[in-house]
Amino acid sequence: MHYIGCMILASISPYFANTLSRLKEYGGKKSLWQEDSATLIRAYESDLDTDQAIGVLQRARRMTRIFRAGLEHNDAFRAQYLSTDLHDWETFEEPPVPREYQDRLTDLLYIVRGPAEIPVLEIGDQARYIGARLFDKCVEGRLKFDVAVHDDNFAALLINATSEDGIRALSEFYLQDRADVTARILVQHNLPRWKGIESNPAKSRLYRKLLQPFREKAMEGTIRSVLTAIPTTRDAEVDGLPYEEYCDLYFKMCDQPWDRIQVAQKHLIQTLNAAKTLRFTNNDGTDLSMDVDGFTFCNSVIARNIPGSEVFSAPHIESTQGVIVAKGRFSVREDNGTIIENLRMEFEKGKLVKWTAEKGQEHFDHAVLLDEGSCRIGEIGIGTNPFLKQHVASILLSEKIGGSFHVALGDSYTMTDYMGDAVHVDNGNRSILHWDITTMLMGKQGRIYADDAVIMDDGIFLDPALRVLNEGWKAVPFHQRPQVWQKIYPEE
Image (cartoon, rainbow, N blue to C red; front, top):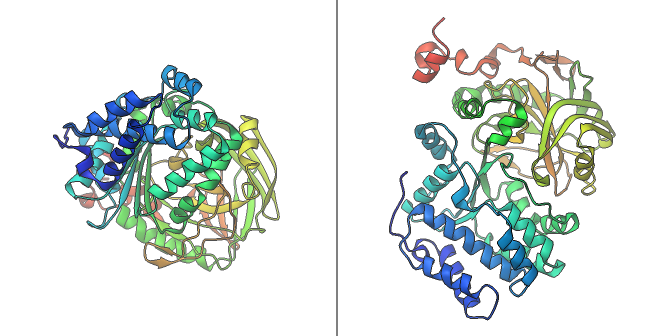
């Protein structure tokens, strides 16, 4: 693995230097964590390679949050911390695919535009290699950057143990640290391999609400964000696929003819923007209509989500009417990756009035009842990735399925510009939830109507100009396909 060696953390980024100053401040005070602070300080002032540096940054971030939460003298919290498997950076893995695939994905994720950029890297399990490569790129670019390692179990312990005042202090600390960030690179795992610790619902809800100003910056596009969610062995287990096969599917989804897809989606958007109403049907019982008059669709390829692709907008907030029957397994990231199965949702005047799940009803209830906006639709999207044609539990992957549509319960996007195009996607719905729920049309006699015209039948776009959205590299002339895709799709 390629690492930049012999680094003194405090010299790499002002963010890391600030953390060292805090550690020294904490180490100078009597607390249960005085010795731990001293150990971290010594690590900060030692030569480290990239892998070691990221591990130290994770532990240092934990220490600063413990003090901010006012738990530095709490014996019960320390005992729980020491007895709980929190899954440190050193236990994270990388997917079983060639490093060249991961290098290509790293290049797509690195959305830094120049030396003035201030990115934050948010790194999860399965990103052991990609996260280190992104770190190296930031160091090579001499950027002011920060790193946050995915740490849900620690966060749950912290939130459960602290008071409301502690939660407010934590949120203020987070917003202060993120005030100058211009780019956010999220390389997450999807379903966790380990059992999650449940956080206190009321405290967790308060914390998420207090962090909403940062979330809104991302939703409106003030902070540019790119996200990927790498499958884990648990994803493969839930979806009934061998893990190596699942990872191969994921990386091939990331490697599609994006330039051609962008052109085709632009053509599709002209049709959608001209429509006043959209209707979605399938033979599971879905029949959903909505008013989109005046809203415009975004051409989402891989600038924000990897893998792409989709087109998305929003309906008028009180216009959605009818039923969605969404078969399959669905994950709720805000609920420790809980799985909910086979959903039925009934909408009246834009509001979800009846909802059932064959499994996981209590988790479905929790999501829908989070706040006033969580029972309304903040987004309508149509998946266009031509390589994935089956439902999977991963939210990021399922919303991209070619031959599907999705609605997001909760927060609407607020940006007015998307990749240089003026857009109107804000229907006014506000929530701490944004949960994409995908419904299959392919193989289910599924149709999309723009006004009264059928634009998709059984999950296939009917317009010949959209062929690449149906077939991907197969729609590209053989000699223009990359070598790997010439093998997958031989010349006919």
